[in-house]
Amino acid sequence: MVSLAYKKYEQLLNDKMELAFRQEELICQAATLISKSLSVKGWIYTCGTGHSHLLAEEIFYRAGGFARVRPLLLPQLMLHESATGSTNEERKEGYAPILFQEYTITKNDVLLISSNSGRNAVPIELASYAHQQGVKIIVITNLAHSKSVTSRHASGLKLYQLGDVVLDNFGEIGDAALTLDGMDTPVGPTSTVIGTALLQAICVEATAQLLAQGITPEVFASSNSDQGATHNEVLLEAYKPLVKML
Image (cartoon, rainbow, N blue to C red; front, side):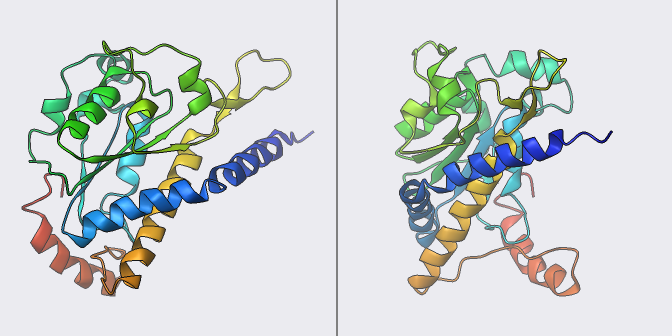
């Protein structure tokens, strides 16, 4: 017999997506922070540790994505070199200056940071460091999870407490959302799917806001189309010297 567990997961995702997109005011507020930044040639910095680094990559060098994006990604905080090692590293303090060492951040910039639990030291320290420089902070997190745990940062703060705009991904505590008969451990995490959708919604809204002001933002096209490759050459020539990972 074919299991229909995936249909239950689909319904869970649909329900959570509907809740996430009801945060209309917050989505628009986040978009306004980005549109204001880009209108004065500010930068969008984006970061996440563990699986949340996927959200940082989601809006970097992406078809339809802004050119003025600087991802803050260190291998030791990601998964591809040592997944278990990254779990240990994201709980340590002292990474904020390292993550920003290539750049000078200003009050015209925005930090878009994702963390499902919002409890680990690196994202908390990064948000605090950026806030001290006058940078606006957009947070995507799981508020239910974050409020159910203690902080792993010396300040005792959690990430959502440092955001100028905080968006909830409406995930389950622990992220995996579906419990199946015969298994105690749930499956089917939702944070990446919902977080990605929220990120792109913010960027789409920010684009519309800029266009309404008569500003056409610099946006990458698909590098796998003939026209897109030509379009991107101009942006890459301008931005490769300014964005480390390009």
